[in-house]
Length: 135
Image 1 (cartoon, rainbow, N blue to C red):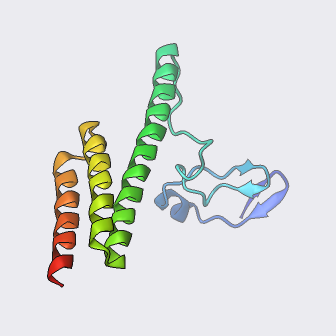
Image 2: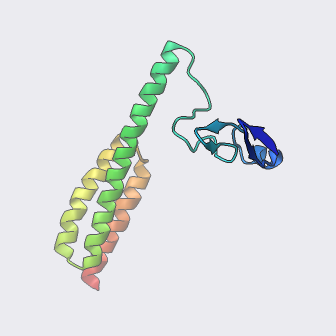
């Protein structure tokens, strides 16, 4: 048992080190010995010490958020197309597929996803739409 600011916490140090966690400390009233070091947005394993490193960290975070928004847009477009295919209306599915193809190509051009992954998504959706006529 280890005392931290008057509170007692039972901590198995071997288990803590195996879990890739920070040393036992308190943030507010929560013991952080069992919190993964990358789970909290306020904890960064490396601190930018120079002006250019801080700027690069800001730029990287902004770009990460932008890329996440684009990936979300891609997933939404693919889900809309899948939903249209599931309804069974081929004309509506083709129209939604065309708009989804535009989104997929745009995101592949920005290298958010690989061009082969984009081609795979488009091919599978097109095959599903084509199979609707045969069914």
